[in-house]
Length: 321
Image (cartoon, rainbow, N blue to C red; front, side, top):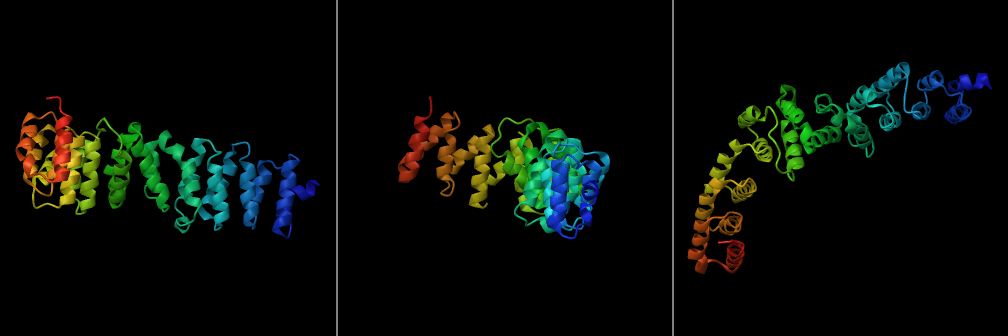
């Protein structure tokens, strides 16, 4: 029996190799050295199951860890890579980094239904443990889902915003700024009363140099979420510009109202004479305690459409004076 347990990789068929390895495991003979040897089998499921069995006690010795890191980089089998990704969740945080990084560089797995998500499940705790390291390591990942999820996780936690800003400012992230800002803006959309992270005030003006309008738009969303007042003047100009895109003007209005920008009030009154923005302006004035705005609505009330009159009544009835 001892001879068989030590040499299952010499068996001709994969099922036989698996049966011998499972038998060794059941008999308590599948030690670290034994399983490391099976990870070097020429059969993919033998290598995969050796990984699974090695992590049953949720720890591996340095020699086995080094072998798994090599498999994460070089193994051609998606089955083995899937088992490695699954193993991440059973490994101590400090042992996950290299395996996770190498798995995330397999572009051939990007469209796989399971691998990107399994890698992410193993990576997620790393973001909270060391956001700076995780962002630097996984933003360039070939598995797009993993890269996006890492940025989204950092944006979702106010404690990690400083690391996120640092990553956005990193010259190595320049080619990824578009999607990083979009993912961050979406993650921050429902957050309120955030503190401006260190470095943001200096970083925000640099986005004006980008030629991509999406970069400007999403950077502005982050600025508003962070309570950065430097984003407000541009929004006011967009709202007041009758020649600007109505959608952009509406987005500017919404952002200014959410920011409770007092300087927007006179601009809102002026929009009562603008067919494109009148309804939104009437509704927005309901969020401000502005006597002049109420008077302006009453003066124009007879000329309003039925919908505008309904909005005007709602706005006026919501006021205390």
